[in-house]
Length: 336
Image (spheres, rainbow, N blue to C red):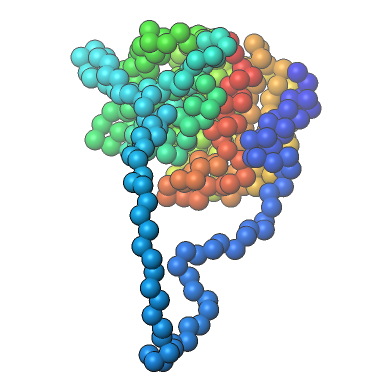
């Protein structure tokens, strides 16, 4: 795919995910109606002017008890326990209604950030809701520790254990539902984004593409992926937790990290930059080995938050675009 056509496709993709055909978001917002607000003045009438009205009582048939609607997400959600070398690990599994679906569904492994958990993370990414609409399977593993986290380093034993655990999660899901092995993806936020990067490096035989938001990429240069893995990422320029420009030997410079993946994937065109919204632009690398494109979405003045999320946590999130929807569309275009 040529660079211009690749970026044009991205523009259409992002515009569609934003819910409108224009890249420029409207700044006009209707004034909210406050429940319980009163603007009119009330004049009290004298007591002798008050008349009494007799209201005829009516008898109506009792309203029958109706069944409480079943939440299609919670009713299809379960916690699965896995033994990893004697350590009990868990993940949340969501399998949507697949009746009438054409072909085997994709699987997206979605990883929470530092100190979070699968349910709190899903309140941010809203991936289960999208999966229910689009018909793909979601596995959301839980990190270890009193402050749950992932070891995304390239050399530690616990990092190897996390990779082994997530490999087992994918294998366990495959035993439960006939997923399309060509369409297995990983995404994550912050520390979970760093873990998605590590999976692309050390489990490239499993994952066709990854999506990261505000990824904390540890030992990013120590990456020897067995095959190309497509990469899409969002990062804010004012992220004070995982700085966009990097943080010494701790976190890598984000544009350099993306360029590293483009080199790793053998991309020969790019980066081609396109302004998508007033506060978001994309740098895209294309003509890559096995079609494994790389796209970095930069959020101007963006903080440590998930784009498009109604629950941004501690930091404000840009409403211009939904990272979750963009990742899903990106995944759809990148099968193994």
